[in-house]
Image (cartoon, rainbow, N blue to C red; front, side, top):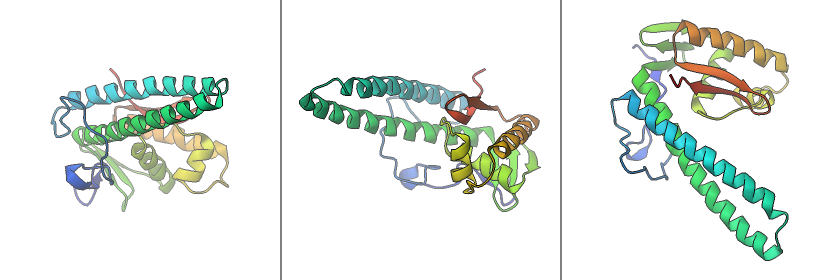
Length: 200
C-alpha cells in the first residue's frame, strides 16, 4: 500500500484505533471493535445512529418545554439536558469508532502526502480541496455540515463562494462512484452535507 494510511491510521490509547483521543464511552454488551466482519460494523453503526436520533428527539422536546416551566423545574430540566448530552457524546464516540473500523475493513486508504484516495486496489489523485473535503467528511461521520461550515472548517477559507462547495461536492461524488466507495454524499435542506454509508 506504499506510504498511504488508512482512515483508521491514528492510534488511540487502550487499543482504540482511529479516535485520536481517550474513549470515555462504554461499549454495549456484545460489541467487539476488533471484528473482521464488516456486517458487524454496519450493525453497530445502525444501533448507535438510532440511539443518537432517539436522544435528539428527547433533547428537542426538553428544550421546547423548558420555556414553560417554573425556575425550579427549569433547573432540574437543565440537569437532564446535561445527562442527555453526555449520553449523546458517548454514542457519537462509539459511532465514530465503528465508522473508522468499517473503513478499515472496506480497504479505504487516504494518502495526505500524495493526496490520493485508494479503495480496494483502485486509486485516484485528488486536488487539495477535494482531498480536504473528503477527509473532513470522513473524520466527522454521520454529521451534517452547512456550506458555510465546510468553508470555515474543511478549508479554513470562509472567503470562498458557496457555489464552489457545490462544485467540489459534484466532483467528489463522481470520484466516490468511480472508486465504488459505498457511500452517498447527501445534501439535506437545512442541515447540509454528509457522507452516508449505503444501507443496501
